[in-house]
Image (cartoon, rainbow, N blue to C red; front, side, top):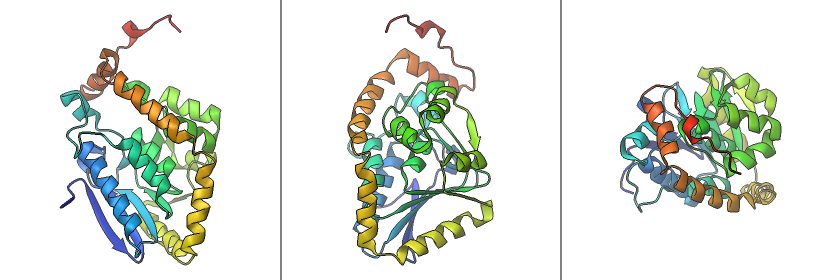
Amino acid sequence: MSGYTDILYEVENGAAIITINRPERYNAFRGRTIDELVHAFRRASADNAVRTVIWTGAGTKAFCAGGDVKQRAETGNYGPTRDGILDADYLHSLIRDIPKPVIAAVNGVAIGGGHVFHVLCDISIASETALFGQAGPRVGSFDAGYGTNYLARIIGQKRAREIWYFCRKYTAAQALEWGLVNAVVPPDQLMATAKAWAAELNDMSPTALKFLKFSFNADTAHHAGLEKMANAGLDLFVATEEAKEGAAAFAEKRAPDFEKYMSTGH
């Protein structure tokens, strides 16, 4: 990949800093964004000078607001990709499989797919202004893979179901109370804190950290299969009129009308 347009990438003191750079869209991702994130994570994985990864969003409003629903409403998809595939599930696997700790520096809203991103990171540090939550059922989408079952492993079934069913927004303080993030700091201290945590990790044995990460992942390795199944179902669902109604309502800033899609079937 010759150059990035949707992300920023730099290496500072052994930490690769990956920034989603679409603040005008609340750092929502399109197909190209996913391609660039995949490339950046692979790049960080292969670079022996990189010991940790810090992942954040540009600006102060958003870490990532999920998929670019406006683009989906306009074109029916998330735009062109390098291989003709939206590689979100591969990106999810990369976050888990890169043999280096990944720290999410959540600087604003982490909603929808952006919420799944931070959940999959090894460590999450949140700004006091961060907001967390899901949007899938409201915009005609869902993540029935890591976004649900792995989330439930972290915060429990009842709270995970609440997040997905009601699409509410939760403060950084609530996220900390629920065990969804590791720390909450003032906005102007977020990146300094993330870099300080990365510096601590950089003093540890990289081989020990790699084995520890893979050991933690082993407990939920079967979720990768559920992720594949869930994405296959999502591919079918987003082509339906029901899903299109959710995306259109979001783009038109109105409430979706899902009543006609109610069914008594099981």
